[in-house]
Image (cartoon, rainbow, N blue to C red):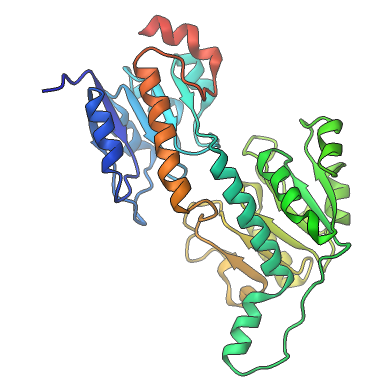
Length: 339
């Protein structure tokens, strides 16, 4: 009988995650499971307060809910919050640092490659008007759809990190021009990628395709608002595989209806699952939009390896080792003293 040394809450448990559960138990963890991955897996703050209380570790994924200061304070034994994704915008990292709780993420190479490939597919889908083309072909409406030739068009990349850089690499054979907005990227890195750095306003005004790859911060939330959508060309397209909070959805819906831009492809929404009254779901803009259910990285390679990286981070922290993928190293001294 393995001695249970730590209590771990594993949220959003997908079918087939028995291997992760088994590894946690073999390491001496008592595993407390969240709801199965259905349309009700999201947790509000009160539920999270209840779930986190008494836990030594929390393993979460995007969309499970906001890990606020109040949630963390309820977990008086909490040592680590291990995220099964790259972004940690749904965790109050500053509060975690103050409380001596480690926050880890899972920057898996396969993950960013997958999202970049998905982004390229979205751009090609919009350029070739594939949604309307499929609809018309099924109804016998022949030669009824036009498309956009990519050659010599401009792609604006907002966020030139690993995903944004990979998007530029994948699209280069199409003979495109590339602009990027990222205040944290040095000019030499952009130059090596064949990308011209510029400000956000110029990027929006000059790009035929704008693709978002920024993380969620106070500065980026709502960055694509009505004023900035009106800067774009009426023939331009917007792609978002980053975070739904980057876009003012009401403004985008209005812009699509009124023709400020030609179309949009979204893998993410402000609400993890958009409500039925979301204006972007309106029938009047149906053929101007392409949506996917936060699926840009949902392939077997990523779905197998991301939980393993999350598991490794979690167990390292529980054992008193500094995890490899630590978001808040400033928390280490207090974390060590709390142990």
